[in-house]
Length: 137
Figure 1 (cartoon, rainbow, N blue to C red):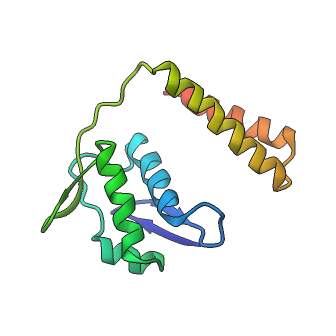
Figure 2: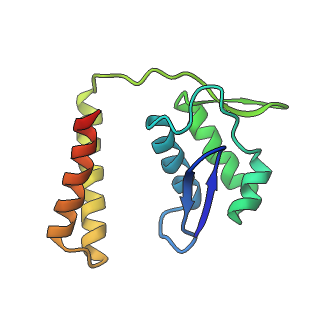
Figure 3: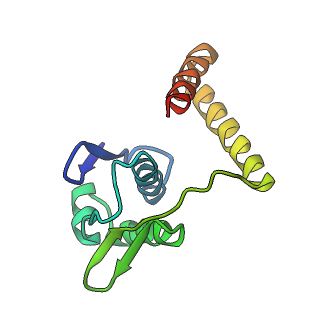
């Protein structure tokens, strides 16, 4: 397990023994930090090679994650300046296709956790906790 922070609390945890590819863990973890505003416009991210060394992974893995976040509109990647968080408006309306994908992804995660031995009651409790934090904002 590797962790990084950008001038504050830990924002990214990578589990190299996970079935989830490392680049996906980087993208998902950073997206959470971006949406939660733990990373804000103007923040500079570690250089690709630096982050790769810190995480114990290949630099192409980090570069792939940064490129995906840039495609989503979260990052500006400069040849010399590295990756910087940019302002991105989070939409307040979703499309039907996105809604279906969202539900499918939750179902997949729930099934994966059940396959790993997490009980239905614990899953329900965790989902309620997550829902409560969303309702508070």
